[in-house]
Length: 326
Image (cartoon, rainbow, N blue to C red):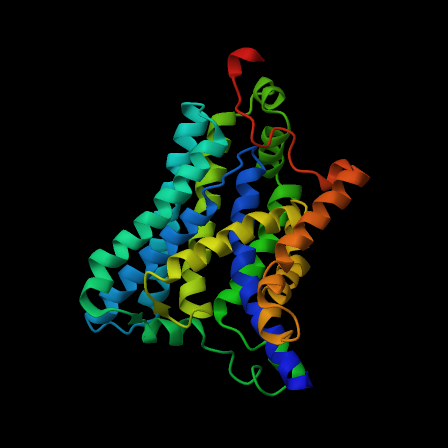
């Protein structure tokens, strides 16, 4: 493997890592309040398809405004996915139905809904769609810095604006978790909702807000996946690919040990392993595609053996809270 090929591999790994980092951060926010949302893959598909449909309608009408494209893609994908989070919260927090069951149902529903939206509003009219104007907006590089610093430009400044927005979101979320009163209250709900409730913290409100906002972030990651990683191309064949990436995002939360700052190295590592099949040609493709999941299993084993509390998920993760039992 020559040096230029290695640089291309790293660039692809970083681009892939950026949007999966956002999806994982959304799931991490949800899990911090004790909600294990296995509906993340379906939620990601809904966000991606909602953005694709709205941008297709806008571009078909002759729209080219960069500001409108950015706002439309972000708002539509975020709120469509946040609605999925609202559904999850209603069933798991208000009706107190098993979280795993609802999450899997939402994944099935979300992937089906994404295909339905595509069939109704895009594919039936034009077949495969290319959102060229949106792709140009989301992949516009920083003038000067993207080409004038050699390898630094290639690895640091050669990405679209959402890459840097995602990095800022991760930093702000980490600060929110550790330095703000609301963030500490949120974490206390995930650790022991009964104690948080006794302390006067509104458990239901925190669970609803964290889950809806986290789902919205996951949906936005789906939109970034289509508009940057998939180069603005959309068809129903994209849905299973995005669903698979959604499962990787769930695994990435475990790999990062529920710590936002760990995503900075964990997400690119996932990206490197994800692209192994294209560059490690001496190995079987199916084996190399398993690498991200194998690494996650290894991390789970290591953290379980070491059994350090700071490397474990919230104590109430996946458990339904019954207030009358406290």
